[in-house]
Image (tube, rainbow, N blue to C red; front, side):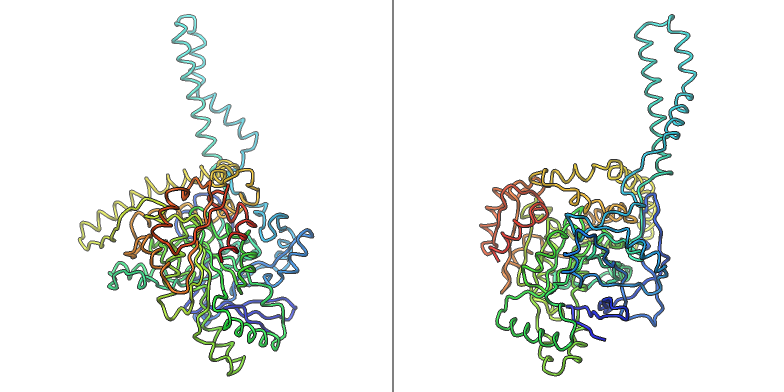
Length: 597
């Protein structure tokens, strides 16, 4: 069977002539749960998105993903990128081939966003309006509950003063509105809440948001040892590490078509030799691009620029994953999984291809054994909150010999770095857990009280805020764009998609709690991280920001401060753009990046 090497992936043609792809699953295990169908409600707690396979099935895992069903308007685009239409089927997953074909025929890509699908028609990101008869019943019932007040007011109006009559009428009106509103909210919560679905359900039914979507299980690599933290771990830390285990991760993976255009093994072998020669001549050639998104977003925010950026940098593959707490990545209970270090550990595992590299050498011959152990150059991008993860990843690549990745380019877009573009919170240390029985009892009481009186109201309020209006995301993103007129429906959809994920409200709550509890073990603040990364040899650091960014104000004194304190950092100002310049003006972002790189 002919196969081709895809930077950590191995693709081949199956008996039906369709391309399949195996991803390395080194140190990964799968956890079995029942696939969950669409549901409403809060969806708090852990997300049931995985399933268990027996120990004999460990090792390589075939991941459930999407098979493209592009519309006629995007046919030419799909032909060029047909290497991304790989089929991934979950081991142990049972689904009808006929129903899958029907679902694929119903999926149509957006004309202005060839890699993005609409939310399926049977799923809803917002509350749906109640039927007319139900609304009438609520109004009549609310009025009937105040019939005594209406009658009393009617028969005693001539005995009362005008001011007292108006006051009583207002009380009755307020009572009517209060009762009808509470009844409407309760019935809407029971009858037509926003959809909440597990990622496993979306993957098994080919309903992931993008043609480039992948869902796989990853054990985050531990990078705390390179962050200057204390090597001695407490018993609580060990418990959290064991609790993390494998995490179901949703990511976007784009493979440059120029690297997989040949299906002949000999042609692939010759191309690899030519590429190795080019890399020796040009030490700055980039093998992979990795992108970290910001707060409130997901990997989908990089979707408009990911293919073009990968091609422009001449990289083999471009990858972006949903950070824990956002998008369609699982949401564990352990707060350790929500730290920036854990986020970096996921990214390094996704880039890890040691097993495939050794297998390719065995197939390719002895002449390529010298390439094993050679570092690959990567470009790391981080937007807003993801800028810190990008810096940690660059530092981890430079300090860990087993990673074999060289951060030749680090690009920070509108970086939200404490002590640089944001006020510094000061250094903090993680409090050690007390073994006192009284303290443990008080803590358990606090946790129970918090779940009842804080967590549930927070989740419900957040769900109401986001799902109560179809225009919530458009209004919010208008403040992030330099020119709100540039905001398209596809831009809004990329942010709205993850809100149908199971337990996303609890995930956001866990993320905030993780930040407040200082779960990060790093003793380096963001400014020190930037200083260390900018001083790395053969690493270029670039900061790109929009002049109209109202979220992270980099314009003016902050930009001057960075130029003075970090002279090796290249700063690019994009006129008239806001907090997301790579989404607001894709072509302009690529031009500015090309000029500085």
